Image (cartoon, rainbow, N blue to C red; front, top):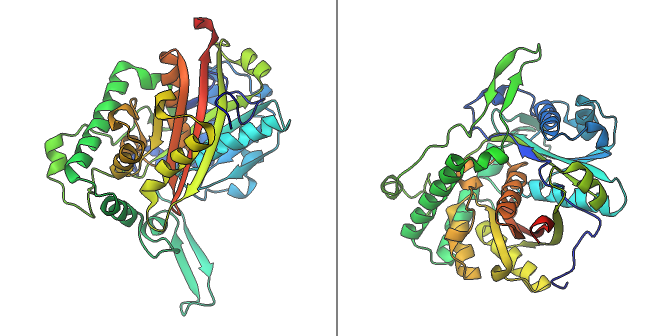
Length: 403
């Protein structure tokens, strides 16, 4: 693929028609008490209203979530009906890669003439995740209960190891230094709070009210509850749980949603408050690292993407990643020979949390907003997912009004 080609020629992301909830940490808000699917759909309706996008414009809906929720069987058609649209759609999931894969699926839908305006809605609630009961005749217990979030975090059936073990294994393979890891964590928190205090997050996250089934207020989600400023000294005092991995050097479970639109160029110009900004999807790549080396998979995906496109980090204006471990960022810096200070300049999932489904969607929205502030350029989005998977994509932001 050449530098000047794009993966989905018809597809555009209309600037300014997106938004996300804040991501409260596990069990710290009323969001832990609601049907997350219903909340996500109602929030999408609210965000579209704030962005002055009529819901009548939607022709298709792509959902991305990874944790079972009540009425999940009905999926996209049900949630579309929540905001008054009787349109088709489908659901997909790939652990923490879901938020990007849903955007890619929507772009393919537009490019294949499956609809000129496709809504992307990603969400998950890790709080009070359901426990499933499965008949298992091969087991002497005959019936096995599974806690969907915590048991999957704690056990990869392909390797027998926990998620945290992948970080320790990757740290040993790449000979990482604990001092550098602590410095990365401290930098990421500083970047997040700088973005918050500057008002940047107000362009991305929308305060949202929560109602119970009777329509009575439960509370308001207006911050990434649970995120607190830390010191480098406090990080250095934390006990290592595995090689270079501490409680501060890994993300936390959280809840939330994010939404954006993928449309044709013509519809993007009609729906965007700034039609002079054009956002296109340039390329994508996926890899699977060796067993229990998940933190290096995103870097390998970026390397594959660059080899395919001829792009390098010198061509990238904004780099954003899903980094459940600070180890991910250190490996990226080594393999791509790139300063980790220049990644995630406006925040990242290491700090604001890990609701899985919407994680990379919020990262993408932040990255696109940052690129617009810079006057345009290429946005690199990458991250890891369960199964030692890495995913990466390049988006191009062009501000035709600045020419």
